[in-house]
Length: 385
Image (cartoon, rainbow, N blue to C red; front, side):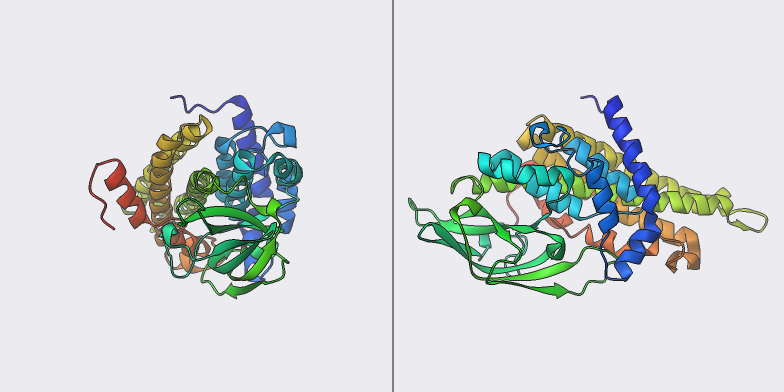
């Protein structure tokens, strides 16, 4: 398996990196603390085609895959601008619609993903279900040609920035009478849909929301694919989610280590830079190694996914998400320690990452559930939960 980037991928990495540096971490933090969004960065990234690198070319996209989108996620994060909506809208929603949407849905929606003019949130998590997607309580029932959706969702990112929400609900299987998953596109201004903002201790321009669906009516065309496409459609979006979250974590780790390495090389105490002391240099080197190992697994997972090896990609995507979350948490913590008291100030730009990398060990799938997955499906152990 060749992980060497093509010339086009290297050019993409360099171009996205330049865009991220143009805005920088100061811009990101300023927007987040003011309760604003990174609208200018999102719009420019869309205009340059970076938001649609994984959208098929016939719909105006770049015709690439999750490998290319992971590059975009990583490089913006490495410049101090980790954009969570890249994971939610292009990685999950656009992929699901490209793979499982009807011809009409692809024609209507994919061009908007390609240029960034359409943003779609993703709603699966529920207060009672947690990590158990089999216990989702949001249901969809037929009412003539329409569907009525009822239920609650929590920790839904970017609803206030989205045009629509890709809602995971459950329908009744006519053959068995059991509930099965189905995905619906719901306009954010649909009657019966209300939202409540969650206050989070994370410096981020993207907000988290509670959603309440009270008999939200959507037409038949809001169903992605058909009634039997729910489970395949759902999983076609979850692996890209894990891969791009991993890429964003790796980029954040790179940003933190870059700041710390620069500080250690310039900060002089007792006549020489603190980076000459192994007590400072070795933790940085250790974190750097962990980040590079995580990046290798991200590249493997993206390559497998783009090649259509879904089962192998699922294993690799989970491992990549686990490795990158751990590496990012280590990198940011190490960067703060290297800075000493300065590390806790806003000015030095590392403590502002602390909440996000800690959340990365929980969402979109917790480290414990990934360990359960690996133990069961890779090591052949009995299911433990």
